[in-house]
Image (cartoon, rainbow, N blue to C red; front, side, top):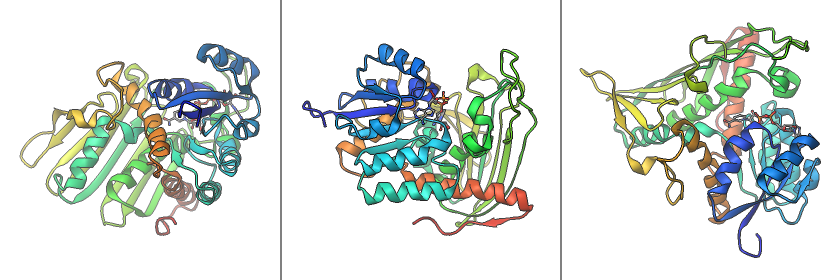
Length: 370
Ligand SMILES: NC(=O)c1ccc[n+]([C@@H]2O[C@H](COP(=O)([O-])OP(=O)(O)OC[C@H]3O[C@@H](n4cnc5c(N)ncnc54)[C@H](O)[C@@H]3O)[C@@H](O)[C@H]2O)c1
């Protein structure tokens, strides 16, 4: 901690998500400060250092992990770099929040979890949508029994994105998978959080867009990952789940947020979270139609957070709460939620979807880790 007692955070990878989620979240938190940044692109690094007023900057993530004036790191780099950086950070005694997917496969994620556990650091997976107000309220309704016994979980994530190059995201060697690891893995995570462990899955992925040129028309090697992903799962509780995601859903732009619908049908009622209206939940009981209900104020932000939920675009600002949870866990000396264990559990299921598709079968999920 700094002399002022603040948690000193280093951001590793200062691209889109760091600028959009993590730096604005940190700026709201008087218990922490941005002390260092790292990016392998020197031009972007210099630009961010100026914008954010940070004097400590490096192009070497391992160097940042070993700086004394850093207590915690946020890793928001391409997926193939997460494991080595997270393990180096844990070994240097730094608390770690890492973007999803934690790694390219469950083997990498296990090594990340074990390094964080063995070095006693706080570890967190940046599963953003767990923090959406309607999702938090849906969880509370479910856990209180208000929806009865959960029977069906249903998730749709449809985006209308350009069919040009996605950069590193469109190559298996750098991203692990496409839509499945980029988008659907969030929905696997919150399904497990809501309904409990998944026992078995079957699934399919597909690629439609070649992505062999960038937006300026410059050619590039074509994509080798999915741009549509799906799974059917059975939870250990006996509930069923159905997930579908695509970035090629024409007409689903919705101010860039796309369409997201996640639903529980319980024995006593149904509840629906939607990203584009995250402060409203849809609720329904037998004999009625699903009806919009405002999310109660207690669920609009985490307890104690100084964030004003009425400020900013609702579908954007809940993302700042990830940083609040990470810093709270460090200050309160408790595990963060979602942790690397949650990242590992979701990764095991996502890997199983690829396996199920390759072998055209159902895949049993081993009992939850560890
Ligand atoms: N939680 C969410 O909702 C969410 C949203 C978007 C992205 N993400 C995840 O965040 C991560 C980053 O995504 P992005 O959209 O910000 O990508 P991006 O390409 O905009 O940014 C990544 C940055 O990392 C830098 N970089 C590459 N290798 C590096 C290394 N070894 N060390 C330091 N810097 C390095 C790049 O130069 C780039 O500036 C990915 O894992 C992605 O899946 C999560």
